[in-house]
Image (tube, rainbow, N blue to C red):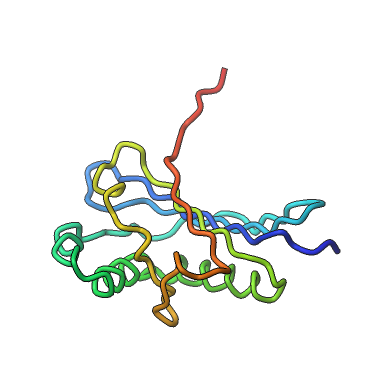
Length: 145
């Protein structure tokens, strides 16, 4: 089997209609130069960020990151998906590409300081981890012809 290029974990977040929560889908893939192995996507319980509380910690990266991390990884499926992808990356000596795909219509979600997100197991900064490539994207829906 070819050496993995990276393990890709996408966490997609879309605002739920008539709610303050976000629908979350987690998808993990192992990519090599030869092929991709898709572990599939799973829907998770809605996530509810307390944007007021996050803003109150804007001068304290540790407290902000702790609250953000606790909120995002409160759902066991999200946390397990992250932990499994990170373990898979480590076992293949490959980086984890963590992609946060955000609802394009939600300004509050885009204002979150995702660079302060921490590993839920050891509270280290994901953005400073050489083995984690943290990116955020805007979800785009392409109409079919």
